[in-house]
Amino acid sequence: MELRELFTVDAVKLELEADSKDDILKELIELLGLDEKSDTILFKTLKRRENLGSTGIGKGIAIPHCRSLVVNKLCLAYGRKPGGTDFSSIDDAPVHHFFLIVAPPLEVSNQYLPILGKIAQFAKDPEIPGRLESISEPEEFLDLLKEKSTR
Image (cartoon, rainbow, N blue to C red; front, side):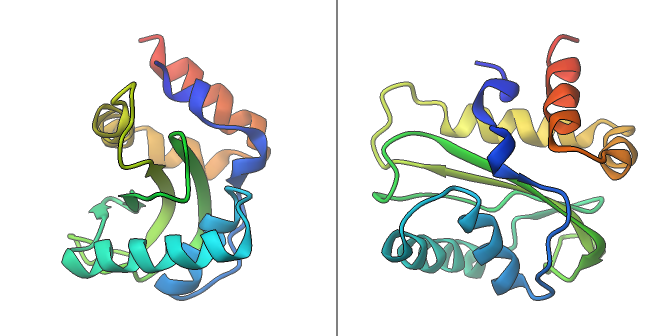
């Protein structure tokens, strides 16, 4: 399964408004379109995951992720914070690009870890941060995912 197939226009936000790590997570969760109770549960689960170690992988990119009963299929969202924010990243640099991954505890397709790997590989491409910065519409983000998955 290609990354492009897992994102929707509604789950892409190019101007995250939040400034703190917690508020960024909440804003990303909102992109999934869950109910308020599910949002709260998911936030607590992601916070527990972040307390184990930051999902900021360096070079301005973070991949917050977890498994949760609040979803019944793999859900992804992307958010961009042009000014960046402190996310306790491994390189201590501000994070500008956030890829949220949430999967159910038992997932028939078993895509959670492979998708996490695909996003990390996508993010490691040296031209990706610059390309992500230049995107002005959510559709351009989806086009970039499609372009990079064909190589």
